[in-house]
Amino acid sequence: MDQVAVVGAGLIGRAWAMVFARAGVPVRLWDKMPGVAEGALALIAERLADLRAAGLVTEAPEAIAARITAAPTIADCVAGATHVQENGPERLAPKQELFAELDRLCGPEVVLASSTSGIPASEFTGNLAGRGRCLVAHPVNPPYLVPLVELVGAPWTDPDVVARTRALMARVGQVPVVALKETRGFVLNRLQAALVAEAFRMVRDGVMSVEDVDACVKDGLGLRWSFMGPFETIDLNAPGGVADYAERFGPLMGGITEEQTPFDYDAATVGRVAEERRAALPLGSIEERSGWRDRRLMALIAHKRGQAG
Image 1 (tube, helix red, strand yellow):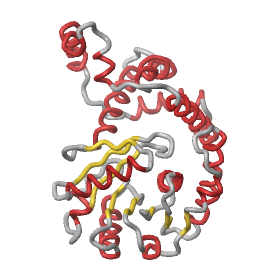
Image 2 (cartoon, rainbow, N blue to C red):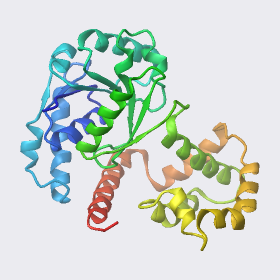
Image 3 (cartoon, one colour):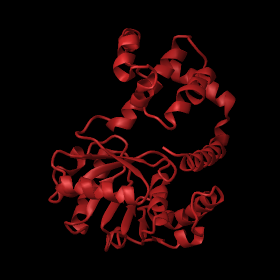
């Protein structure tokens, strides 16, 4: 049986521990800050209870939680592991240091995967003796509810390592996708960046309010995108499929993209959006609203599981 080491017990690390444990995989969890890994266990237990209440796990939450143990040291965490999921700071220097330590501690057969949201593996693994077993496995927050995982290797990553990681992710219930080469921000973030930048521009240019832009997605695009990607969406939006769509709407859509210049997140626009969001949701209520979001995601996942196709 696989044993997984989760290095870093913050939000993403806790979620990864749940992903692996609910699939029956033993997990050791470690964090460099004293007491954080131990404290994470109680938070994990709460989320597992929520999953059980939503009908997304059939096993007793206590049984799943029992597969997760807090390790006192990073060496204890990775001992015996076949896969290491790193969740350290999103900064290059700490990631280089952490991967150098992981490469030193782990045998050559152990896969070293980073949850980084945007740092290519080539930037923090190039000088490692075991650089061929390193890659990015970028999840979507929270990964125990949103199953997509982007697998992005460096130019020197062994293809077998990518294949092994893809098989592991599929086995624990995630949806792995493989990037054929490194790009800045990977693929999901690039898709998200395009939409978010355009949303900011619509507010900046006085086209629409923050609330109504959000409605365009949650009550428009998002309904289709919750079960179809952009290519399938446009394929179904014209009688002759993608080619017909491009012929009908290509000039319009292409003209729109010509108008879309880079958005630099200027302080005035960000401030305006933040002001409207704080009027709608006080800062102190973000954690509560995040819990609501997670429960809505649970309900959506339960619904999707009951649908065919």
